[in-house]
View 1 (tube, rainbow, N blue to C red):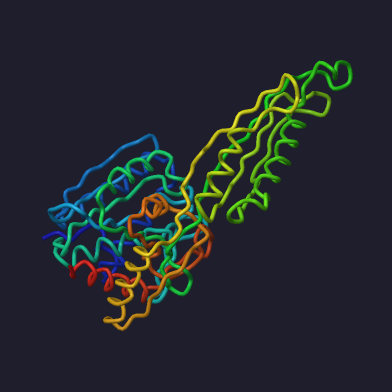
View 2: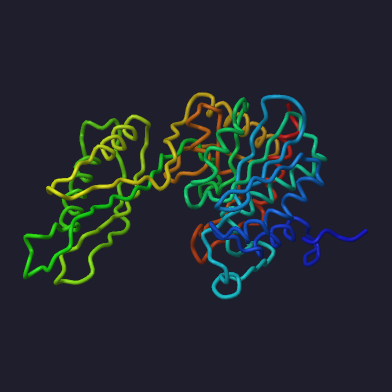
Length: 374
């Protein structure tokens, strides 16, 4: 019998499989790369016993795989895209495995989490004690613009959800996440010669600056139910100093602790109006994940996982996280949810991205035990 393609380099099939995933570089919006990594994943999930579906969008190929019959599935949620452009593997961050630490683009965020899913499902012969649905999206790193509706659709009736993003540095699960919204505010004015006909122009940059001051006041309003993080990430506009600029825009990242402050700020942004007569204002939402504030069912799921971990000699707990992810969509729907089930490591989105091999094995053991118990 021929060995599986991911078992050709190492003596450890788990490490081999992770290496295969890492060496298929899969940056967000690269549809060809997305299809390439979806192929071996789909094949392995099907070989384990899953009923596999591929969902293709403008961003790439997502994977759904159902194990076991019946309603109320447990969701195992991850993503195949990374922040790294093609060529990173050969130039800046080559694959390495010294027996203790694994390095490579996307190894930590979050291909090692996918390896945990697949290995645990294989260990139980694809026959979990409850129905399981694997959801691997293709565009999580850019806010899931084409897959958010797929996630919520496939979550209908789910009993619980486990996300396989990286955990807190100490291995704690992420229970509750800030909401995250990216918007562009675009001001449209009228160009003119800045010296000969300034009165004929409407400065889009001046309009944008004034609007950004309004935004600052909105997010710092003491009447908000919770503090809001606001980062004006990019500003662009104009052509040269002797031309009144006719277009200017800024991309803004917003983070929300709760739904009340989120709704208040986003509604206020939608209601922004031009200050200068004759100018025009556009507010475009690029991506939005609702705030997920931990609830009692989330805590109960965390306690179940902690109890199972204790039976294996592991210690695990959970606490909120600042970053957003696909689990925001599930936790905000009141589906019992935890995230951070990927192995410990560090350097997400950085050149020291790495996974601790011992933690990889611990997470596989833990998930295997969870899937084996009703």
